[in-house]
Each structure stands twice: as C-alpha cells, then as structure tokens.
Image (cartoon, rainbow, N blue to C red):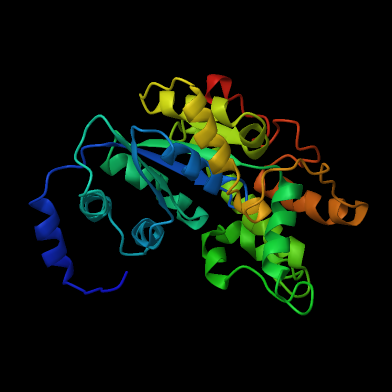
Length: 305
C-alpha cells in the first residue's frame, strides 16, 4: 500500500455495518505452506469467473490472534470477521463470481470462527508429505544463510502449537532452528497438520488435496476446486494455455517450469528423531510422496480429490 491510516475499532465496525454482505462466493485455501498454495492461487485466477485471488492478506492472519486471545468471545469474533470480509471484498459485487483467499498457515486456528460468522464460506486444505515439506522450508530459510540452520521460522509461528504438545519439545532442542533446524520445522508442519485433522473430522475443511496431485494434474485439481465452489469448468485450449503459464510461476521452483524431483526420504537418523514427534501429534510418518497418507487413519471418503 502507498498510504494507510488507522481508525478506532467502533468506527471501523460502524462503516462496515453500513455496507452490504460480500456478494461473491468465498473460497479459502488453507495449507501447510511450501506445498503449492501459490500455484493454486494462480490457477484459480486464470478462470474468468474468479474475480480475485488474495494471497495471505494480513487481516485474515490477524484473525488467529483474535480468536485465541484470552478476552475473545464468539459474538465479537463474528462481528469482526463479517466486517473484515465486507471491507476486504468490497470491490467485487457479482454473485456469479468467486474470490479465493489463500491465508497464511498460522491462521488455521481461525477456520471455525470464520465458518461460524460466515457459514457460506468454503474451506479447502492443501498439504504435502512431511519429508519434502520440511526440505522445502529448510532450503528456503537457509538459502541466504552463511551457516546451515542459521535461520528458522519466526518465533511467533510457534504460538499456535498447543501447550501440551509444545512442552516436551522445549526440553530437547526441537524448537531451536540452530541446534535442530529440520526438527524445528517439523514441529511447525505437524502443528498445521494436527489442526487440519481436527477440522476435517469436524467437517470444517470440506476438500483436501496434495501438492503431488496439483503438479501432476493441475487441470483436474482446478476443475474440482471450481466445482466445489459451485462454478462450472470446461477445459479449452485457451484455459490449458493459461494453466501452463500459471504452473510456470511455481514458487517451489523459482519461476521455472515444474520438473519432477526424486522422492524425499528421511535418513535413519531423521526417522528416529521425527517419529516420536509424528506420534505425539497423531500423524502417521510419511515417506513416499506418491501415497495419500497425510491424514493418518481418517477416512475422508469423497472429501479427498
């Protein structure tokens, strides 16, 4: 933004309450991060009925702090969420369109509150097996570091780790990006998956899909997502070209066209170190990127693409 200004909370609420409810359908794409969410956002934006694809808007990330605050209450949350979405989507006025919102992974705790405030919102989840996900985070964070493991995720990210799950790892350097850089990232991955599992069980995340499916069959994933949002998708030469162009912007490959990589495996040492973490969070250890095992023993039925 080139300009910004602040207004009192009550003034913001008053202004938002004078505005109509968001007209377009709202599709949230939640994820573990480093799993193709940028591709999804770009793919959706190639469709003529997708009015906009918003990537990690700060207002949505802030919802997480709101819903977990000690003084939080459902009525205030509902009011804030409705007003925030009215402001965020005020420029789109057609009921025949979809606006996609790709939140930051740490905001996943806000899913239930968003659904309670705006029941018509649609929520999906994108994930990746643990080994390639951790490797991708590690490569990104250490890219400009002089010493491997020198950088890690911000400490604020780990506020979402439930206390009863965080305490055991605080005593064995798991959360130290310097002493155990991959384990540090592994706890974050397991935390996001932990919340996703709970939300899927309770029906808040209605569609899940994987990075591997996305890069192998982007048209199929795009079609499923749009159909899930109530939009018709018909593949044409033009739509295929737009999809290929969007795939060429994959942030996993620094703007280069997707090239399949070898399957990531944990080393025996990593397997010994990470298995207890998986088990504590209730997530099966995942070795092969070709298997759809990311959500343990949950029977997703037709929720899984």
